[in-house]
Image (cartoon, rainbow, N blue to C red; front, side):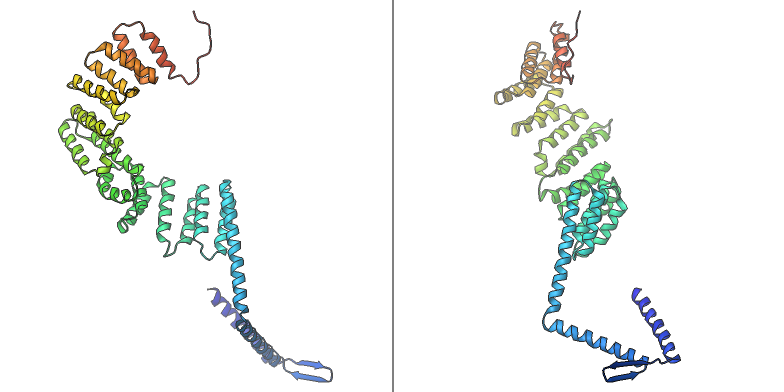
Length: 404
């Protein structure tokens, strides 16, 4: 557009000058010592133009012949590069100081000077995002996008949506990316995180077999474990409360689809056992917990083992006593032993286990369990342990006040 306007301007200017020359040719006299040259103004102008063109051509030939052009071009390029790097460095320093507005200006200046604008515009996007200027951040991504960095730009855009809470937009974009590239772990990771935020558990369960393969190819992800845990809980909570057997079957079928490395994760085992307990199948949970604890010790599983209703509490108590030989200083195991002793109606043993557990670790839940037992035994020490347990909930020591 600018070239067209310039061409039109020159045409108009040429027409005006041509009209003036036709109206009056003018007169030019050049005198030097005893020599003089007379010519019309038109001819003088034409000669000046020809001389200028010849001078430019001669300068171009000289610069090209002696390598001056390359030197000048190199110097100018290096100068622009150093200015661009300096602006980028200043912008990063300002970002570190949380001066996002000035940092953004520096990044834009760097992009205007740099040959590769991607780093500077990406930083400008982050600075704009920090100021909650989402549209400006999106504009920088558009300016930075090329055929070579399209994936990086799309991932950055997805992160922008995630950070601003636009989960649906992030999921839509990441699904498209994942359909074209299922070997990129970061795409799968971001997609899973977005779906978790949306609590789309049904969709998560459908995608987990594919997503887990992609993510686990690099490392076990916290989001992946969380997705499996929440899916198990969701199945138990939304299951048929009348036909609990059908819900148990759904849980079993989903558990069967889990990769081996996920089944060996004790946090996921805990969620599965808790889901099974929620729908009332304590015995199945007991076997799962017992077998898992035989393979790997986990305090959460030990605590859950003491919470379930055992059909044969004496047998379960014996299993726990075998664990005590290997873990004699475990306050969680002693709490579980106390609860199993209560289920077996072994009151003195339960009391002793709770006392040992509190000796190792003063836990509020253990205090509550112990006080409940002492109250039912009409033990006068119940009040003492109740106060001790309540003190665990107090964040500051009580003031020294007179008492009756």
